[in-house]
Image (cartoon, rainbow, N blue to C red; front, side):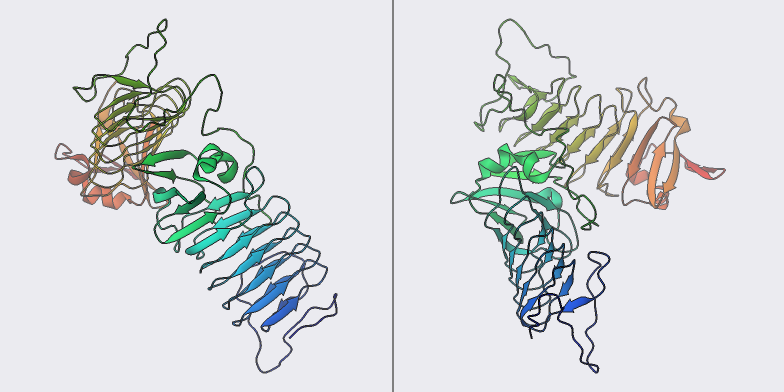
Length: 456
C-alpha cells in the first residue's frame, strides 16, 4: 500500500486493527509514524519514523534524518540524503544507507549491507545480530564497526576471530559472522583502530587465526549519541617505519639485537630452561611456541603468548597481555593494564595502576602483593571454587593484612585497605563471606563484622 504523495506519510487508518508501535524510540520531534503494509513505502522529506510489517517491505526514505525498522519480513531498506538509522529485522534483509552518515544494523538473519557515500557505522550488538552479514562497500578510514556483547550474537566478546576467506576479511565468533568484501584480514590488522575505534585494545594470533579481544561496548547507544570516539588517543600498533614492532614469523621471537645497547633483565625469575628472552618494542609482540620470557618496554605493549608456560612482564607502559593455552605468569606494570589469562592455570598480577584482569578458562590465581599491586583492580570473571586470591602484606600495597575491608558496591564485592582495592565482578559480598576458604585458601582464619563493614 503506497501513498505516492511525497509529503504525506502512509498510515494504517483501519480502526479495528491498530498497528502497535513496539520499536524503540528513534528521532525526536516526529509528529506521525509511518507503518508499512508490505510492498513499497516512502517516507516524507521530514525526519520520519517508519515501521515495517510482518511481510516483505521495501522502505525508501527521502530527505531528513530517518529511523527505519524493517520488521519481521525479508525487507529492503533504502536511506536517503540524511543521517539515517536503518535497522532490519528477523530475516535476511538488504540495507542501502545512501548519502549521509548512517547507522546500519542488520538484525538477525543473513543480511547484505551497503553504507553508501560518507562515513557510516555498522553495528552488531545484543539486539540480535547473529547470522552471516556481508558489508559490500566498507571503506577503511571512513566507515566504522561497533561490536558489543549482548544476549544474541557475539556471546563472548573475547572470542571474536578474524580470518581470511579468499581475500575477504571474516570476523566471527562461531555463530555470527561479518564479511567485509574488498577488505583483507591484513587490512583489518593494520587499521584496527580506524575500523573499530579506540576500543580495539588487542589484536592477537591464536594458531593460524587472528583474534580481536575487547573490541567495543556499544550497548545502549542511540542516534543522538556519538557512537565512536574518533580521536586516536592510543593506537594499537606502532607503525613507525624505523622501528619494526612485530615479527610475524610465528616461531621466531622478537629480540633486541642492537649490539651497543644491551637490554638488562630486571624482571623476577619466570619459567626455567628458556635460552633467550623476548624484548617488546612497543606495539604488538608474540612469544614463540616454547616456554618463553617476554619483557615489555616503557611504551604501550601488546604481548601475546602462544603455547607453552610463559612469563610476560608488561613494563612501564599501559599494556595488554594475552596468555594462551599454557600455565602462564602474567605481570602488569606501572600503569593501568589489561590482562587475559586464556586457557591454563595462570598466575596474574596487575602491578600498579587500575588494572582489568580476566583469568579465562581453568583455575587461575590472582596475586596482590608487596611488589606493587596498589590501585583499583577489577577481576571480571572470578569463579568461586575455581579461582583463588592471594593477598600478602608488603611495601607496595595492602600495608597491613589485618586491615582489609570487604564491602558491597552495587552487588559487587570490593576488598580494599584504603589505597588499594579489588573488585570481583559478578561476586557479591555474601558470596565472599560464605566461600572465604575457597577464595583465599585455608589460611583465612577469621571473617568478622566491624560496624557496617566486613573485615578479613
